[in-house]
Image (cartoon, rainbow, N blue to C red; front, side, top):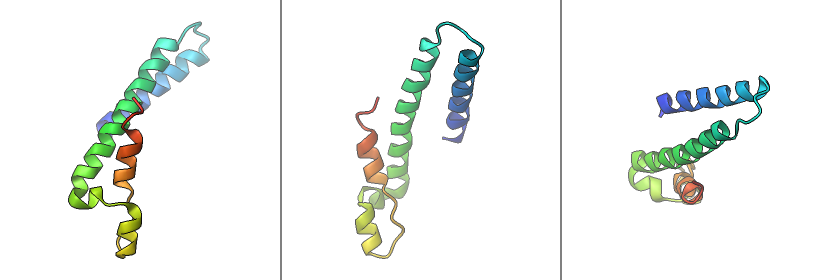
Length: 84
């Protein structure tokens, strides 16, 4: 996850630098960054749920009610499912 985050940041920085340099059309670079970030956000949310095991499927409110740290992993996964 960390390596992909670092690479994604580089793509964003490159896109911004090209736009700032006055390139007339950076739509392809911007579209690539947008697509990759939305797909990666789903992958990260999915891995978070898997790492948390059974607690990954539990709502943050349910975890908090039992005195545990309220991590909304399932909400993140549901929210990112249709974003790509």
